Structures are given as C-alpha cells and as structure tokens.
Length: 399
Image (cartoon, one colour):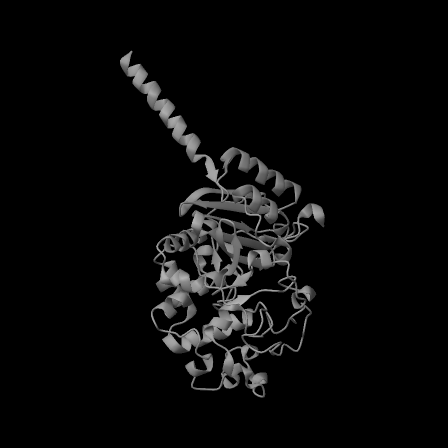
C-alpha cells in the first residue's frame, strides 16, 4: 500500500509538471495552454488558406513551443514538418547583421568608416562576374563615398531595395542603381545596400559570405541545414512555396550567396540562431548591444510601396527604429527586436523581447501567411506592438 501511494504521488507530480510545461508564457505575464494555441493556429491556417505554417515560441532563451501546420506541397498533400528547408528570404539579413556585429566588436570593421576605404578601386569601377550587379552609373554621384556599414545594415544608404524596382515598388527595366536621398538621412529598406557591404567585407577579410557564416554562425550553432547557397543535401527535404491561390511554386535555388536574401534554413535551425541571440542578450553581450542600438527613427507610413515615402507619426508610441539588420520597437515589456522575410511563396516574421526572455518565429510557405501574423502574434505571446499596418500584414478578414 505504501508503494502504491508513492507511485500515485509520482504520477500526480509528473502530470503537474507536464501541465506547467504545456503553459506558454507571454510577454504580459499571462499564459496560454499548448492545446488552446494549437486549436487557434489551426483555425487561422484553415480559414485564411495558409498552405503551411510553423510557429516557434521561446521562453527563457529556449524553445517552449514548436509545431508545423498544413502542407509542404499541396499537390502531393505532404505534411509540413519542422526540419524541412524553407527559402529564408530576408531572414538572411538578420544573420548577416549578427555576423557584421561580431566583426565590428573584434575591431575587424569600423561601422562608421566609409566603405570606399575598404576598396582600392572606386566603387563605381568595381568589376563583377554578373555585370548588372555593378555600380557604374554612380560614377558621377560621389555620395557613394559617404556610405558606411552602419548605413547598409540600417537601410539608410539611399538606395532602392533592388535596382530594378523603384522606391515605390514600380518595375524599372533599365535596372540602374541610384540614390533617392543623401546617405544616412532617411530610412528606405535596401537589399542593394546589404550587397555592397557584403562585397566590402569579402574584400576586407578575404573570405566570402558563406565561408564566414559557416565559421561564425552555422557551424557553431549546429545549423546543419542552413546555407546562403543551395546544397545537395537540401534536395529531398525542402518545402515548396505557394501562391495566394495555393498553387505550387517551383524551387528557386540560389547559385550565389547573397546577404540580402539567399539563405535557406529550417525552423529548427533558425530557432537555434534566435536562441543564441536571446542568450547573448541575457549576458549583455557587446555584440547584441551593437546590433540593437537604434540608428535611425522610422517615420514612413509603410515600409514598402507608395506610402513608404509618406511620413507619419503613427509609430511614435513604439519608437520604431532600425539597428544592424534588425528592426526595433518599444513596448511596456521592454524593447522588441524583429526581422521579417518575404519572397515569392514564403513569408516569415520573428520578434524577440529579451527583457522577458520571450520571442516568436513564424515561418510559412504561403503567400497568405502574413494575413494571420497579427492574430498569431497576439495569441501566441501577446505581442500587440508589432506595427502590422507598417509591415502590410493586413488581416485576412480586413482585406
């Protein structure tokens, strides 16, 4: 009888511990049961026609919740799983920001030194295998001499996002790179700026992006299924992107590393990266201090499109800003550090609240995913501070 009582006590204790583990902590101090979160997410995925979505929530610098919903390929009815390779899109920039912050902390690069000083040739005269990547048409505009690493990572170079797309989102077939404003004076999201910094770092260190990333990020964090280049080992383990009509998109394989957006990764791998960032914040690391120091206040109505050139005070309450490859916002629960990813068929978002040791990662292979981000952020971690309108995360039931 005595042993039976001991067994019962142990079972009760075990059930109690499982119950506690199943409660996900949120930034306002509340919790949500794992089963309730499952139900809410599945309902949103089904209602908004999100083909596939993975949700990861971090509590105390570690994964507290991580699940996949929907399909990796709708035509085949293959279930999505957490170890499948996604096109990471601009999540690439967050990793690059971390890498450059390490180099800056070690004194290898000066964030405020003009990049021109890291080249022996004038930037407009640099030679590229793909000629269209060059900067020849800036030869008569010496503002290129002012551009620094900090400006590239904070999106203040004055360049468009991509040379074949205007600042307002119109296609420009001539593909000439140009300045929309003086470097360092305003915010305008720019992959072109990231690429210029990538070239400068390669020239400075003698190492390419993939080599540096493997050495400093992917290998130390055991991100074995992550790369800025497509790898053969990804072939049998990737998910397809899907359009808003849920049509399958063929895989586009990166043939050259691009800090601005060529990275492939898995939810499991990228979670390891975010865990590392949260842990460094807990240690008051000089690297995360560099990354998360605001460099520019953002006053645009939206991040992209015609409204990106219109000014607004709508985000003053959250001090919307940009650091080194990451966006920054203020909440009653401390600062939030965020990074999006958006490419054809893939939509992602991550935000960390280090003062609460809480964060969330959303990774999707659907062009409908951003329509549920606002609600999942609120349900999952009580994040009502992400500027969903500025991000253009318009809810599916408001379109």
